[in-house]
Image (cartoon, rainbow, N blue to C red; front, side):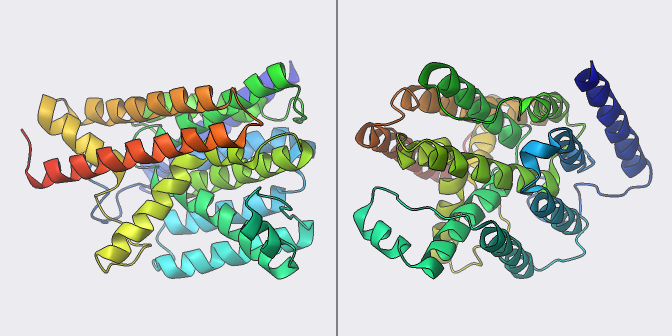
Length: 340
């Protein structure tokens, strides 16, 4: 009963804050950047992170060790959404300081990756901090990178949560019980509102999701030594690879890796669907998210059937990366040919 009342309360608070933002033209998605009008023409509040933060407070004891860091990242995300800090390099620097501080004070370390050359370096404390920081930053920024279509990020992490429940049920993994239900319900609300283009996560929401799931999955691996670390890589492959691929792509074209553009994978799929089938912007936007997450659901579900088999998991990760790369090249070529 308390959970239901709390869920109703935070949604009321969320609705009021969203109404305030919309009415006062505060914390809106359209700030003039080139990519913002690509897949949505409406002006939408970036308040999804507020609901996520409120839902996390329900499980205070489960998240108490990371609550301060989540709150600081949320504030940084709000500042980013408001364009108070316009420099992407400065935002990245602040993210790095926040995450390093958390890793240092929580003494979070990864002791084995089952890659011998990396494991040798992990024996060095400072390299370990660098490695864990790098991994979390890739997920946090990757989550923000893929947050360009309706519900793409939120649905992806719902899929990850579903995989965790599957693993807990069939493989008896040590996962904190009752830790994610309020977060799960809030994500479902946000997915529905995203599909209607009523609410977006914003940087605050994507930062929170990226950080939370980084910590959840690192701790999952540390608490279950029978697991392969490549299961964690598989579960986070899409936001991570999107980030790394985008960095390499932008370096290749001599652009800042932190700058926004309109050539992300999800944007190319949106462009293809929109031009090829002449669907509306909203339909094309929603279809893009559904297609990407449906493929990810298949890959993650099949791969998670082998949670301890590194070689099999590496095969699934490789298949996902090859599929992504082939489709990206084809879609990019089609975009330049301006398909109809």
